[in-house]
Amino acid sequence: MARPDEAQRLHDLSEAELAVEIQLRSHGELGLIREIGPRKLFPMIRQVARKFAARRIFLVGEAAHVMPPLGAQGLNLSLRDAAFAVESIAASRGDPGSALAQKEYDELRRSDVMFRIAAIDAMNRSLLADILPFAGARAAAMAAISAVPALRQFAMKRGLGESGTLPAFMTN
Ligand SMILES: Cc1cc2nc3c(=O)[nH]c(=O)nc-3n(C[C@H](O)[C@H](O)[C@H](O)COP(=O)(O)OP(=O)(O)OC[C@H]3O[C@@H](n4cnc5c(N)ncnc54)[C@H](O)[C@@H]3O)c2cc1C
Image 1 (tube, rainbow, N blue to C red):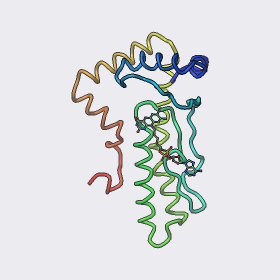
Image 2: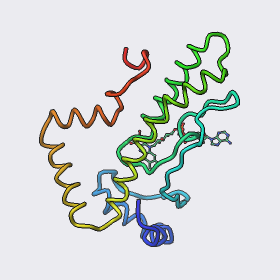
Image 3: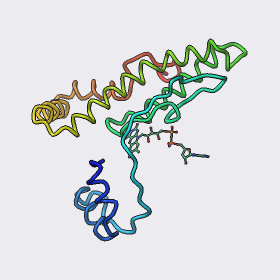
């Protein structure tokens, strides 16, 4: 991710120049960078559907919500969407698209999604705002998570969404 002007600069580089940039930023972890494919710029935005289920349609994954790829949340949220949709449908007894099943699914997902999006948004803004106290607080939090195993485990569980209410078949 980069600020818009920097993203445009990277986008407009020649293939060799961009390969050098990626090489430097990836510290060689990905081997020698070459043969770069087509490029596209994507705005780092957040979007949430007004309803997660309506008119016999359940929205899961990025059809329901998009957010900047920070904190490894998108896929985990999407898996929980799918699991909760299955659970709501299974509990609907005969009418998988019933208004009740859709309302239940919408309510079950909204709090989880909104909480994650707010957290990612705050993280994104703190990264963009070059404000020293933010950077210091973030660095201190990362150092503590990396140094204290119990804290690391707690953060991982929160990140994976293991600590909230989960559908039965995600906990077995
Ligand atoms: C750079 C980046 C890093 C990320 N890192 C992480 C991470 O570390 N951890 C994490 O949990 N999440 C991460 N995510 C988020 C995660 O990738 C997404 O949340 C997840 O892939 C969403 O799944 P999805 O099935 O909703 O959408 P997608 O994975 O985008 O799947 C949609 C599929 O539909 C296909 N499609 C689109 N239009 C049509 C059409 N008209 N007809 C047929 N097929 C179509 C597409 O080709 C695609 O295969 C990251 C995202 C990005 C961009």
